[in-house]
Image: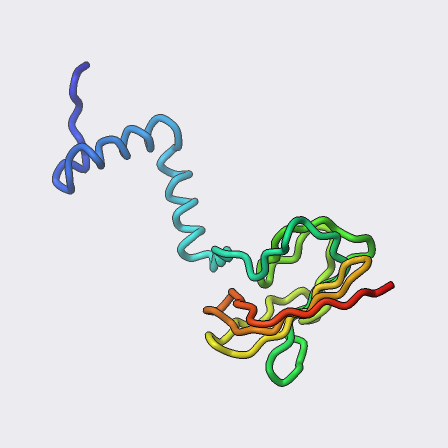
Length: 150
């Protein structure tokens, strides 16, 4: 195999050479720059970890987050129950409609350590989790209660 001049040779040798080969063969440089630029400058904010992981998939009909003042800061509901196994703060799953904040705007970022209460409603039960914000989009429950709705 004939070696070609590596345009990144001054920056670091073989590792970058492999990247250059990937860039040229699989992804056009223009598309790659567009994707990187969109992620950096487009305000891309994908939650890394779930806000709440449910013990096995649950048929949810409503979910809300309240702050320590008992003010609802994010809520969503579904006309028909939806099977979910995790909830990501600010991300409205298919089949749900965001109720709070109105107009579909993003809920405010959480303050690390602030007290939060979540209510998760299924067809038969309501779960309340009390805990704390862990960063701007995560939750750590410290206490849970369940009530039957039937």
